[in-house]
Length: 363
Image (cartoon, rainbow, N blue to C red; front, side, top):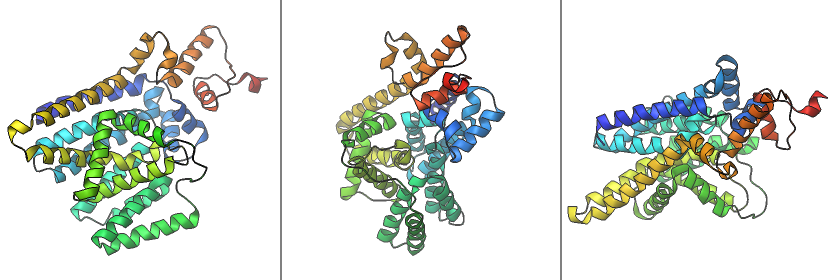
């Protein structure tokens, strides 16, 4: 991908993210963060909501972290590809992933964790270890699911005999165990294993996820296993194992699997460039099909509000939980009604954001 094409795409992307952040009503997850959570994402959300008006104010920090992630991913790609054009293409694919677009425009903990993961890998590969302990401390306090990250570091340190990494990762894991922190594990087999594949398909887009799965498997069998692979594979494997017994929250795992885009493009380049031009045709066609579906997924997200308004039955739309309370509030206020009762806790938080409280509370 040429630099000028990438810059045009980046400009359009910046506009699309701002458009989504400004026009998309508050989501159930954001509403719960705003009124019933106390993690770092909730604190940033509450502060920005207080000082910056509108939907954009809710998301200003998360937009920043989203673009920071794109910049760090580009810097990481520069280290993994000899050609700058490959780094541009990898970054273009990365920023078009549905998980990146939605995380950059809607408040969530994952987009805060992702740049820390990318920065750790980047500094580790450069050999700049001074700041690494501070990044690990930040991950430890910010994200309870970062236990996955420390397990991956331990595996990598053991395989490559990095004693410092083994000691640090082991220390953090022991603290996790002592404090009983980390991902809650429990329940009985409930059939969420198939569901996790659907979640990853929405995170990557379906065809990109298939190639992600292939890349993880291919490198496991006979590829070079670098730090990114250990982090992404460990998170992916943990999510599959846990999904057998319980429902998985993708924000726990997404920050650790998304950097694998570097590995996916590297695997594709290796597959196509070792073949003669006449045998590259089907690989290129496959790539164009995957990119077409990725662009289509991105367009659906960007123009989801238009699609919602055009649908004859909006209840079938994936964003109905965002827009149903929003339009309900408009209807209530047009009739001069300032209270409404609902059984959904998160919907109550959404209505509260718009100034609609429970009628029972008012009585």
